[in-house]
Amino acid sequence: MNKLALAVLLAMSLSACQTVKTTQGGTVGIDRTQIMSPLVSSQSLMQQATLSYNGLLQKESKQGTLNPNAAQTARVRAIANRLIPQVAVFRPDAVNWQWEVNVIASPQVNAWCMPGGKIAVYTGIIDKLKLNDNEIAAILGHEIAHALREHAREQASEQSLMQLGMLGAQLGGVQAGTLNAAGQLYQVGVGLPHSRTHETEADRIGVELAARAGYDPRAAIGLWQKMVQLSGSAPPEFLSTHPSAQTRIQDLEVYSERVMPLYLAARK
Image 1 (tube, one colour):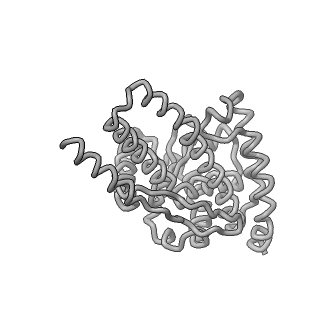
Image 2 (cartoon, rainbow, N blue to C red):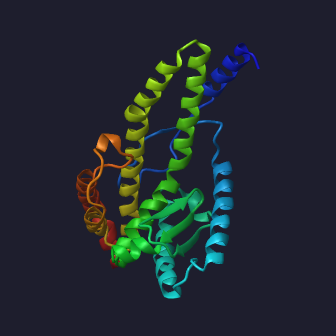
């Protein structure tokens, strides 16, 4: 393919980008528009997620680390089953996703939700933080929120567009050193701030999902206080994919109070 053809392809790809809102705002008021690349579709990511998730479950099952504690698995699933119907507030179509929830025996302090609702919770986060049900709801709500907002698709779109931009710069004769510097500036100036925005959105949606399901949204504050005690020091916020613990806790204090009426109504 010659340079002219590549330039035409680049221009077409950039012009086809879509500005979308993946979710409704909810009580927490998430209203940021997102730029999605036509090269990254929701359907393809969900298909990839399903394949990856099934492969992981097979691996963990062979190792005897998939849902080893029936009571613990039932507990996590019961909490998730109260949260999942609440996603309709943010995007009604997500209620019909093929949701799956599994617990993996691992010391990792981690949990995640893949595109399309494939959830895994590691025993390390439950055991090391001694989580109560409200705190588990905060974690699940946060991870579900990432899937609702399609943050994985947005990140993949950003990377795709950045690569296309780099290609365009190369075609324009920009030197490698300049491209490397531009890539680093992009990461600090755009990539990391966007990642922190994703985390903040997930925190806010997460507390609303928890509140609507009848779980105390203020538990997210205590959860992050526990995380700070466990993790200790962290890199400066501007060099991190996540907001600082102090920033996060302050934001959660505001938004957990905003959704308290939802929690109180759900408890009646």
